[in-house]
Every structure is written in C-alpha cells, then in structure tokens.
Length: 390
Ligand SMILES: Cc1ncc(COP(=O)(O)O)c(C=O)c1O
Image 1 (cartoon, rainbow, N blue to C red):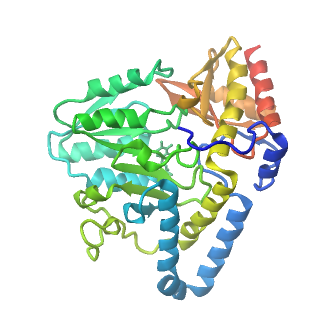
Image 2: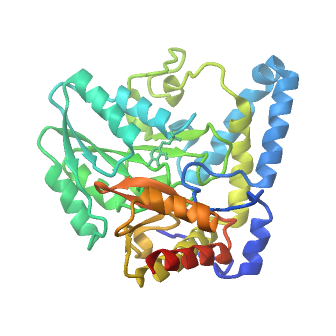
Image 3: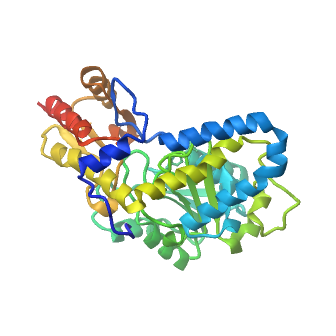
C-alpha cells in the first residue's frame, strides 16, 4: 500500500533514536504491547495538557466562541490527510462508536444477510449480532486462513459467502490479533459487483500503514485516532461517502442539520475538547515522521523478530510475512506452552511486555512494537524466543 518514498533509512538507529527521544518511554520493561492504544509523543502531550488547562479556565467561553472554528479546522486537516472532504467525516470517541453509528443506522430490512469474519473485532461483531437479532437479519461467516496464498484466495472466500440477500460485508483492514492486512480494495470491488455494501473497520491500519480512504473503494470507513496516530485517548473517526449519508438513521441525531449532512449523525452532547484539539498536533507529529517512513520502520522491527522466530522449532508464526500482508503487529505461539504462560515468562524472566490473544480457535502471543522501539529491544525478544524454544 505504501504510496510515498521513504526519506529515513528504517535501519538508521541514530535517526530513530532521535524519534525515540520524542516519547516518554516506560522504565523497567520493554513495551511490545502497543496494540491497545498509542502513546502520545511529547509535543502532542504538551499541547493536550495546554488545551485541557485552557478549557478548564475558559469553560463556556471557549466552547461557545472558539471551539466551533477549532473543531472545523481539525476536520479540515483530517480531510486532507485521509483524502476525503470535511463534510464526509465525523469525529467520534473511538471506532466502536463509529461502527455503532453505521451498523445501528444502516437501512436493513428483515431477511437481509450480513457477512462477518471469524477474525473481526469482537465488539463490532457483537453489535452486528445484536442488530441482526433485533431486525431479523441473517449472518454468514468467513474463516480466513492465517497464511493466505493470494489476494484471489481471500476475495474468493468472501465472494462465496455472498447470497442474493446479502446487504453488507464487514471488512477489518488489519486484524487486531495477528496483524494480517486484508486486500480491502479488491474485496470491495468484488462486493460492489454484487451490489453489496462494505463497512471497513480500519481501527488498526490508520496512520500505521500508508493509505488514504479512497484507496479502499468503500462507502463506510471507521478508524481510531488514539491508536497509531497517537492522539489522546477518546478520539476516532467515521467516514461516510457523501451520497450515502442520508441513508443512515441517526443514533445520536441532530435534527438541525439537513439529511445529507454528516453532522446530523453526531450530536454527542458535551464532550471533552482537549483530545479533539490535540488531533491537529498528532497529525503534525505524524507528518514530521512521514507515513512511509513510519510504515517502513515498523515493518523492519517486526520482520527482524519474525525472521529469527521462523527458524525456531517450537515456535509457530501466526502472521504472514509478505510486506503487503502485515506491518507492526504480529503473533506467534509456542507449540507446547499456553500463550498466557509465554506472556508471563517473557515478562517475569525478560521484562518484555506482550499480550495473549485468541487466534484461530487457539491462543497466541501478540507482539506490537512502536516508533520508540529500538533494534536492541527487538533483539532482547529474539534472545527470549531462543530461550523459550530451546
Ligand atoms: C480491529 C478493531 N476494531 C475496533 C476496535 C475498537 O477500538 P475502540 O475500543 O478504541 O473503539 C479495535 C480495538 O482494538 C480493533 O482492534
């Protein structure tokens, strides 16, 4: 997906040490669990703290007189970054909220069918299941291989799940447990041929790999801004292509806006301004590093341990290594040891923090470095894996 050339060598430890110095890195352990939410870089955190103080001092004066224009400015910056227009974007609290607005507001009728994957995010699947029970919808499920042979294989899996009653296909751009990247544009093109809508959950791919919303060819996209963009906790983004906005029934409605205005779907009441304002600072930091540089560095870090692990007998990689199929997030299992025990061993013996996840019916250990991760951090993991596999 990478669209721009890199300008920082992904293996230049001196250059990346400079970027590492822009983060407050936890002492006492190596954090390889950056998949839950992101850390704010120091300039973003400083700006965020300033916004919180400003809002606290000015209260209603800020909200009534200054916030509308500041909010609009953040939206314009997001539109530029995502390749959309600000009238097609709604800032939400997170991906869960954005997906709820879509799923609960979509004009389903009884008997319609939905296609979900066994790898999709639990709470998004649960929302579809709740709406299916309430509205009398059918669900068809796809099981994705851990190591697909080709895009065609994945497109074919989804195509075979489509029936004449299928209305919507859920696609997770980057799977949260294994980091596998789906060929969303190709699946969406196939689905369009069948008259099926695609909702993309891009919580993890946003500002992680280098892509823009129109690349996906989907009318509905939800992302997190508090994961890889490094904005404060509590911000996500919903994109609906302008022509489709009027079809979505509001969950948090605002009758003061026209039917085709996305703001009609986003009356959230009084919410904190600080995280929204700091999106601008997170975007500035991201641009300073560069999307292509970030993607290349993250991929290099993960490839380093995966290549070492691939040679170890008792270790099974659960993530494909081809560059178009994964980036920072990857997972493994030790064949004769529960993932929970591996996570404990890595932390207690080696001070490496990871997390166990349910993967393809079993469990695995998810490893997620960040921009502040050094090659020596990764080498510590490689040493620990060698120990485990011995
Ligand atoms: C693929 C995916 N979708 C949705 C979510 C939900 O994100 P949030 O809890 O921030 O709404 C996550 C969180 O990890 C995720 O990985």
